[in-house]
Image (cartoon, rainbow, N blue to C red):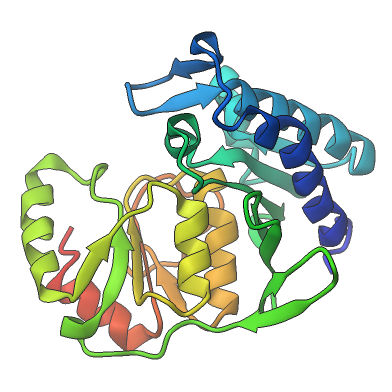
Length: 274
């Protein structure tokens, strides 16, 4: 348990918000319920905004001392993001991760939250509204798949394999243009590359031991804090491209996750040559 946030209570809050504000809108969005933000594929829906509003209001009652950072709150007031590095306690929320999928009627989206204490991620939760379960971790406590009936299953990252047998996921759309073609060519060295357009499900897939690598270049805390901690608690090695630890306030520098340090080194040297 963290010192001031009961993660089971936070996990239940994510579930309640999904049932109240997200699932009733799935495949029922009207034309005015979906809007583009930075580009045509960067979307926000009524589900994102209403779910975040509910989570924020409930979190303020439960943990009034915590800084609340939601993706849509920061979209409205980018200055909020600067408070994360020095906050004693923060709750970071992505109300609908995989909004493009959600708006397209694809059942691959999730609700994510992390708890940050004095600049360190100490808890992470990824809720799958379609499967009605959580993947979650508290620092030092392992990674777990938990279900509403109390069933819990410990998660472990995949065993290391040779580069040409690696299966994984990479978000190449935000790579520097001059490097993208090179890295896409390098990915011919692995067995398979895929991408769900949903970090929530990519991290769940990795923590469950089904793939061998994840790579991201654009780092927003609501997208990666929970999943990185969960991956590490499942036994994986995670670092930015320069080998430094990924911290909550980092917005750049890339992120590469692999089953162990040796696999990370091979992927960094042979594939992700950013």
